[in-house]
Length: 436
Image (cartoon, rainbow, N blue to C red):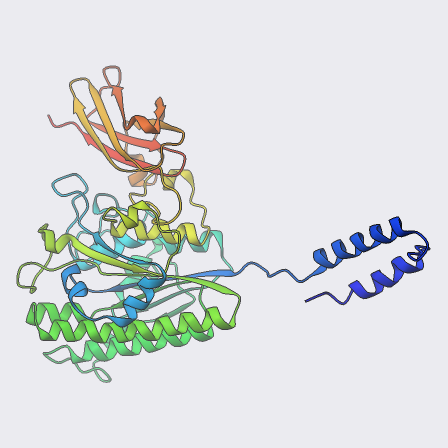
């Protein structure tokens, strides 16, 4: 729509002595100026405010989600995509991570595997808060923006996000709805986990309502019921029914997002995933079998890259994907510690490897984009783990397209090396431990 200020400006130009009837050249100049003024004065749409939601629905193997009819997940993936993913870190490597719930949650929150974030089981005994979670990075950069946690497990907010943890900055979300599992009056505990289903329903309805009305900028939703069905009944109709219930819950949250996008100048991204698969028979998890490690991701994100479309992304990739969408600037010393990479936009390479070869370390990577150089940095300390800084040295620089580099370590003997590969579009990192 044309701004009303145009009209007096047009009149003023005509009053300044431009007699367009007698001077045709000036007439055309005036018309051109007026048209330019009209174009530049039209209301241009303001940039959309970006908002993000990530959801963990507990304990659903990829083969189950692929076998069942899930219309809500399908409608979301039609906008963005669906991919098989993985948890568990590098099998038999230094980052191997138990396929246990809280371990998976924290891998998503921090973008790191268990060798860094140090949450080894559901007890959450000594999380290493030096590997900061996405909420902490977000609130540091955008203190005025709003965060939310809606969870069927209280520890997600208090221990992992860190609202009850001084070391995590006592980071309290602006909106939260959790702890209902502690209320045995309203939600009396039973042997078939119906109370967990009812809590999931309350969490879902609250999340959808707050998203519709308050539109937090960054939200986490966690639902538990499907994992309980797996533990009690294994691969069963009960687990299948739990997944179908979950899909209806996702529909309510998805409708809230669509409502916001339709009625407000907002752009939303949603990532839905699970924290682990299940072992043979479906009752248990925690190990490194293929089914326990194989998960999935559903998203409406656009510009999905080769990591998502052609490889098998990891749960640690969700955090940097949201970071990219919300334009969160992570300090370099933190960024180089993150194990995941964005699933949208350009990336240079994936799947770094590092191995000892006599007095050298051989580094390899899978090339996605051949542009530019790969800078190889090395440190022989891990001070970051305790809140300090590591003294990285630039060792060499090679074309990304070379796919590999070699570091001579004769002059830097150590029993531990941290390697960072800095490329134009992403970082990769590896640890090398010398066994004696």
